Image 1 (cartoon, rainbow, N blue to C red):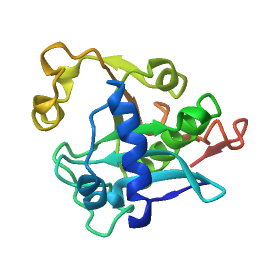
Image 2 (image 1 turned 135 degrees about the horizontal axis):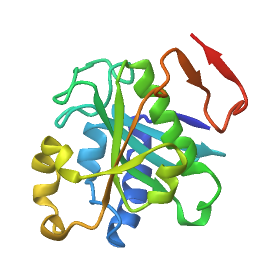
Image 3 (image 1 turned 60 degrees about the horizontal axis):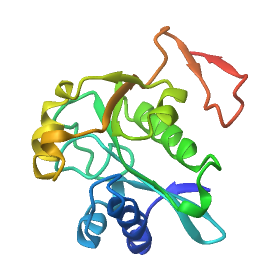
Image 4 (image 1 turned 45 degrees about the vertical axis):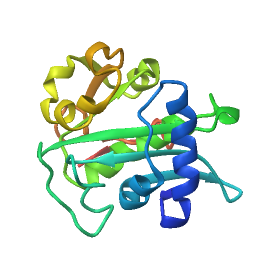
Length: 188
């Protein structure tokens, strides 16, 4: 089950992130940072255990998107939102958890009225399956300025920047999540 994270999830979230950070797959986050930005996190939970997490950020300095938390900041880059800290427990890879979390982020961004969603990632094939396309990192100058400047890989970053519209390009058509009623198309 995917749900919004709460403060009781902070340690589990931080441990998942640190596992992947120790392998050079993402930036580490402190327990204090995760706790401070908990409103922006989602968790995938099964039998009371957090198996996956990610966060959604609409501005650099704000922890979440309007509608996910009570302090909805329209964001520095306006209609753009970022998927951050996507982490799945290694015993549960290839079970659709990451896909489900990203899809939920896309849905949350749509509810918040965002136009585009982006990510810096090593999981290119996962994001391509969800409609993301590769772009140059310099399309996100505020992201680079705020987050990447402190990264040890900043001068030789090998992550791939990807972006997609929150809603499909054809106006008036919304296709449900591939995980839920994939054959159903709703016209608005």
